[in-house]
Length: 309
Image 1 (tube, rainbow, N blue to C red):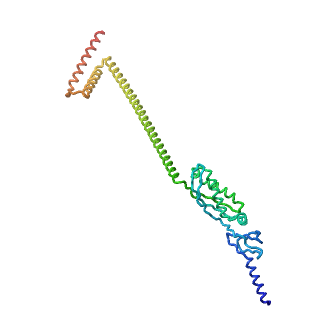
Image 2: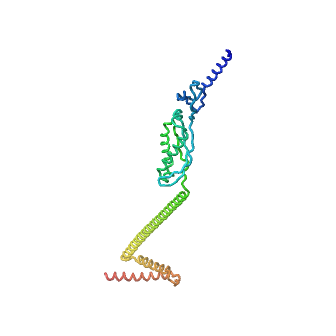
Image 3: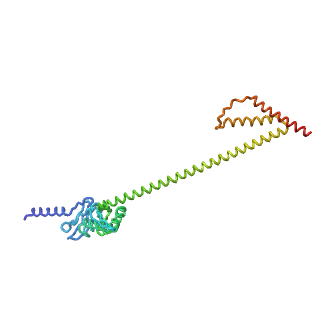
């Protein structure tokens, strides 16, 4: 073998060694380096170098957050109801070495751990709690699964229950229960409305009766007051006429008799059961009657004067 051939062989080996020592790590990935099968360090994203022949890339680990569907599984609840549940789990590798060497097949391990804890957490709850406390279930699952995966260098960010499907007969029973409950609430509200309406109606009638009684009371008081004032006025007028007659005033007698006469005619004329038609009276007749009464009064006064003398 000549020198030229040997030189070309050396050059080819050098190029091969350089090529084997240079590693380009993409963003979002990390490579573990093994020397003779033992982990030594981790290559970060970018252009990296290893010792050729002695070192090699052991695992290429995805460091980005990943999402994985949890398949549907049947769960027996605390009150012996069979439900079908599925979900989704979000996780991210924080330590490439632990994720590579602490667990075999990381995704299957996370999936099975999540499914097991879903059965554990949801199996300890009643059906009503499963349907109404989904946020509580998600929080419990996240806490349990995240704590269990810490030794694997994994951070579980979210565990979400997507669907909870009870059996068909149980769904129908729940629908009938909800309908019965709604009918019950509607009947209660209707009865309460009728009761309130009756109360308001009774209150209105009570207030109307009170106002009517108050009105009658006020009217009676006004009528009594008017009659009292009329009686006082009548008594005062009678007293004044009596005083005038005692003093010998003939005009007072004329006025008193004529007033009573006119009032009597007015009462007869406005009576509803009267059927007799009164023709117009002559004023001279009335005046004559008044004059006659006046003459009688004069004689009475004259007799009383003579007796006194």
